[in-house]
Image (cartoon, rainbow, N blue to C red; front, side, top):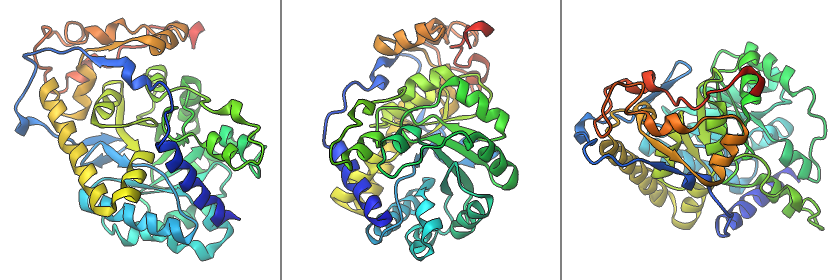
Length: 381
């Protein structure tokens, strides 16, 4: 049953990639174009740092799959592409391995095909500390990812219905392991309140993983004969909304969910993400064109992100946080209702950096300017 469910997830995720999913709120984030802001390409670095980690690039292959023979092949191919490009990679949920150790190799291939790369093990919030260590040891993992998925579990026919112990178990896991712990949603987003709670639980970073990419509630509802949980399709906040909401909450933020191309990567970085992940789009490329196609896509994304940084005058991914951005549409309405002042985002080059509009931000200017999105009182938090 578990192996079949993993194969169903891949099939239904690919079906979603071929269908329209409505508005993507990254399109409601626009850079202000300053025609003299550009710098020289050799000045640009793609390196990023967070939670004591140094990554050569700010793009990662996010959690997908594992647990069946077919998904083991997918994991091997994903890891091969990660190895060829230096891109970090996360495993899919390793719960299947805890239930059936015979499927260990479907996850272990992530390390075998990527012996020197950055590999993240993925577990759920109910995993025991013993099982967490099993997962970390199996992958020789550099970091641990704990996923939160109440909407998915609710729509899943055989899903969990008890969520009250999750926070305490996350705290227990974070205290027990000696590698950074990243907590992520699976596509419904992390609110500011959730990120503040995660900080208190001792995790190292939060992947907001918002609405806009693969919809796992929709996937699980697709496994139901009657599809009676269709009302959960599209549940949650977009990735862009989550980044704006959680800015300044005290944890390094990663971003995934609805990331379609390098401009979305740049937008997420400008809104405060330290690195940006994608799953469904990379999976579609792999299944349509093979490993070489995915390697080509990853290299293209990295090259185009560097090109965007060059044009915008951002020497590093962090410097994109000093670029002027405009927030419009439903995303702006979300910010208004959550008490987030977006006006400073459009005035970063004239406030906070002592730079004239149109000039290149100084190295490290992003640190001084910040996202400046939360002009809130305590009563609004």
